[in-house]
Length: 280
Image (cartoon, rainbow, N blue to C red; front, top):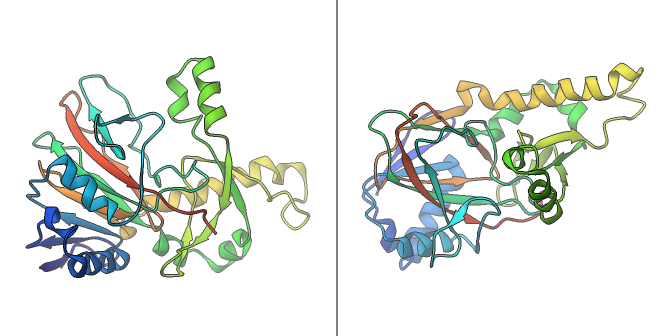
């Protein structure tokens, strides 16, 4: 196996590996898992996998989960379809960590390209450990101990009817997570806010609020500043998809952005999502 780091901050492409065989090779899987913790996201080309292979490999990392909005591939629980047709919509072209609106957000995912345009449709991943590490010390001090609410309603619920939206929220109520979470394996500190973050829940203290202007306006300015850190190129790697390309990412330590520049061309992807644990 050859390891080719793609940037100084994040991402490596691995060659000489057949992911369909990894589920049966504990030593090789352990090596890939260690590389994932180091590089945050791993890329593989020319992986002629079946859906069963895809699920078996992803399951090596842990139990898989479905999505309340995306379609599950029939006969393959834990494998969802991400299909973009001639209908123009925008859900993934924002920097985000998958399903931070869950009480236990996913710890990772394995995404395989089924078909894609010849040009366009790249995905960007961001190292949110670096995003936190490089924050000014006064900001680190200010956000230490802060928690933020995360919700599904204002993103996936926006195109639903009121009744559908209320049902979505009933099944997926708002949750709160630390603004700076700790990686359960590496113990690194991670900036953990994004488009699913709605507001801080413990910002309005005498230390932070002098006048009313410091409440919601002040908190929102700080939250937007933190969210904007994912857009810094020095923390990023960009990957061009080809059929049978696969990406595996650490959903705790990264965010990603699916570039929607290929409309009206279609694109079909399939993703296995690995259950995680409560952020701390």
